[in-house]
Image (cartoon, rainbow over all chains, first blue to last red; front, side, top):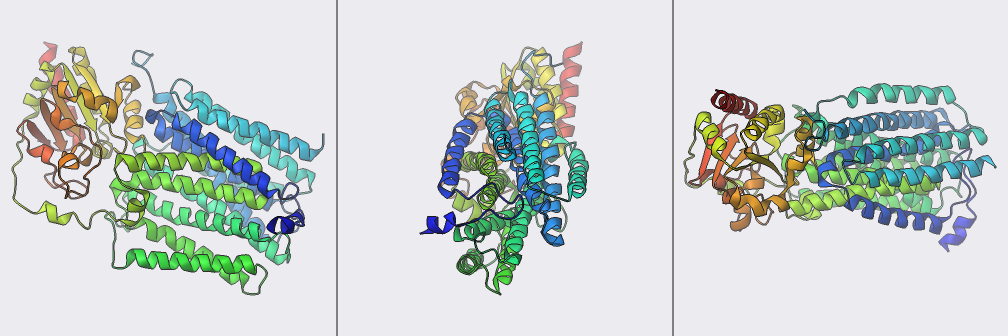
Length: 117
Length: 473
């Protein structure tokens, strides 16, 4: 019944979504991505847990995608645009600081005799 | 190729790069490649989104550019903080992530509501919207508070704050938020819907605060990991709202990372999720701190230096105290001097040492200590009986033998570094007061234990001078 209702769901306003909502498809993607995430991250060395967290921090700033879509809407009222712009600001902060600090930390991890003085 | 196909193609490549990025983090050798891959993935995601927006006739591009520039201007200095402040920075970053998700959810709801867009507010979308703002705003205030606690901001209480009926009232509020959510799902276009939505936002903001105030510093590694997972899951919810598979994938990667880290942290403290979130540490512990007054044996730094020089194997156990005192560079000096004298020096790293997962490793790496000498708890415990000297620097609960033997201790069952099995123990401690949880540490009263009271940085500096002075001539 829910699926029936969803198939009638038209694409939201300008740039608001990409085609019709394919609920089961989205759930599949979510499930598979979670499995991949578990497998990949379980292998991350404990040594690198802090950089891992700052890296995933930057990755979660993928919210910038939604923020751009909201901000660029043509027919949206001003306050909706404003909320979107603040969200872009927040996400960009995370992208920039997250990737930079991860790289800064990783540069410090050196092996025995591996050029470390 | 239509614009839509191009967008989906860019998203596809971006997703693959995000997965590779995390895969490369498995090894310090390839980890930096992981960062570049992540940057490329994010760039493609932004380019793809802008392409889609332009193709469907978007606007406000100058404003968007401005928001990007402002974000970069704030983000850059945030990446330059000293590494001892990385836990705070990470918490702050979770807060930004949560806020972004919450705001996008709010904007979407009011946009659809204003358009009276019944189709866009289908039940499933509203469920995802409610989840997005609940997780987003809860992460926002919770992380701000966590960052404040970690930064030791004055007006935020450091000690866990508890009051009667705490859990009951939290659950009551949660039930209220759920009820509002259900009402919203059933009647998304009702005249009262914006108020219900506002109510959920207010409750989520309150939750963030209420969930974090009863949590103490020692639980921070778990809490930061949980907030990390929440930030990721709110991005997943946003992906469902916007029907955007890139958001779902990247959010799920972040969510599973946070979840795995929380589980590792919980195991390392022998506590359940539930216990960390609802079982405020600290109430039950005052009783055991009373009791008979035992005596510490303290020793001079000079004789500590002499004992360490004679040792074959010295194991250093760093803890939060090392971070607070910024002692890692002095630790490195002692490490160098001992190595020069032919002593094997290893670091024993407890998973929850410090205030976030992996905290100690980063600080020691900053001091240019090679990572092959940073050994995980499970690996080093077998070697502990062979250790001639264990040097505990600002660590407490992670070396407390009560975790193995004393069933009444709040940390009973927590896996610890077996410092007490070594031949001799030196422990650097700021003061004679008991540790964070208010628990006495039996390790300090053993016959083979000697205390070195003082600031970790000062003591390690002095130790380095003694080691250098005696061996040099």
